[in-house]
Length: 165
Image 1 (cartoon, one colour):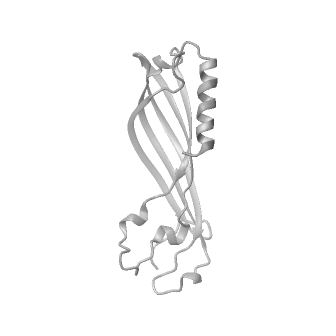
Image 2 (cartoon, helix red, strand yellow; image 1 turned 45 degrees about the horizontal axis):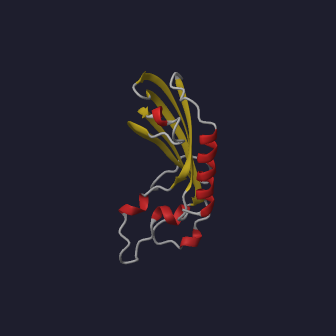
Image 3 (cartoon, rainbow, N blue to C red; image 1 turned 45 degrees about the vertical axis):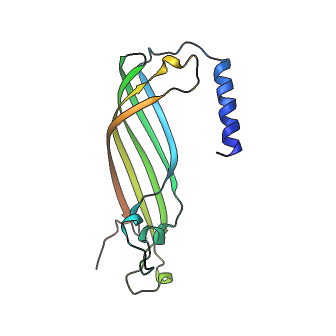
């Protein structure tokens, strides 16, 4: 953990204790915004032990992860020492890279750009144990649900990429 993160957590905890009030569990809705790094694990299924196969995702898009943005909406349906909620969420992730050349071609021959987009969707039930919110600034949340992701890969002309001839 770097120093900036530790300092931020201490300041956040101090500010939360200074303004601690009774938790408001009578709210009906919750909205969440999520930000994080995401990198698909596509390359994990390819054998690279002899060095003869280049990882296709890393070759096209690089080794770094891009930011995944998400938004969720929950409706509180019951309160048992904290709200139980049902809701849905969605997100957006996109990365750009260079098209992978066909087998036998030189890697530098590929000049088309390619775009990989993912739209993750969630249906979820969550529980927030906010009874401790007046004593401690962090509230544990448990969540179960179903996830589904829509995705597409676009070619250099922003058309859906086709595999093969």
